[in-house]
Amino acid sequence: MSHLLVVTRPALVSGYRLAGVEAFAAKSAAEAQQLIAKWLDTDETGLLAVDEAFWADFDSAFLQRLAAAEHLPHMVLPGERPDGTELTGRSRIASMLRQAIGFHITFQGEQ
Image (cartoon, rainbow, N blue to C red; front, side):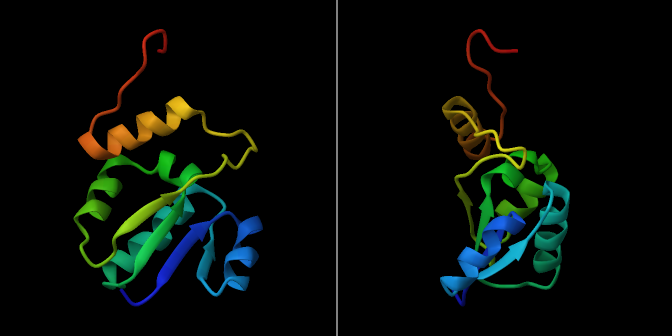
């Protein structure tokens, strides 16, 4: 593992950089996905950490591609959505389960 690559909201980039981490700003999940796709295409190596709000909006084909990339292991950084609302505990659990099993689940009483 050569380095840590963090993809997060613009407001948080400076804090990661002050900590000595390579941090990259994205204003949307699409922008973050495009940046990460470039790294996948160029075989960039390192540990990828992605803001949870972006991760939740990545399309499933991209997530499968990322999961198959052995040279760029990844983790999700807990956080809030760009509109300022926090992801609920249920949303986090559903997202983790979707990542682990490949299916989106819903809880009783949700649509």
